[in-house]
Image (cartoon, rainbow over all chains, first blue to last red; front, side, top):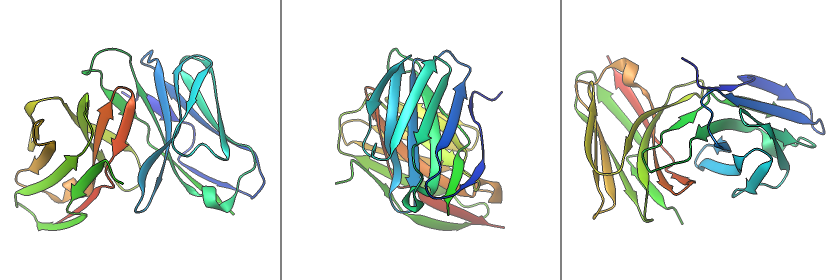
Length: 114
Length: 107
């Protein structure tokens, strides 16, 4: 009954590497989100997308980019990973509609940049 | 400034105790979500509320729109309830998250 799938649970990358975090949802949702979660700071929005090829910056987009070529897939890209991007990354999706549309979260990717 | 404040930050309870976690928010909302995050990271949505009260098993969530306040109650707590509980409010497509309440239930 998995609805939002993130490609990796744990990832270790070197400083300067290009990193791709993938998120796939099977609910035909228009809206998809990428968050990072850090102790004491909670979840912070990096980017979101409200349709294929559409994207909006969130609160902390610096150092990140995103790609949404297909409706079901939303990729987060770290062009040149840095140690301050070590964090838990969470993907979410939500349909468009009234206030009663539920949001679903992935299982998270814990990224360590060394 | 935090749009969503949760209390307490940490909570330790004995098995069987009744638990309450509080959430206050300062923005107008479309809906409020209670989320559960177990060690390892995955987040599960427990409730989505826009008014009143919802119950699912031993979990009860209430919201008072006028007071901008919500509570999550756990009756007859169990060690498997140990997790971080996160309050999130949604305005349109924008989510605001609390920093979470870490609950430990001791056998």
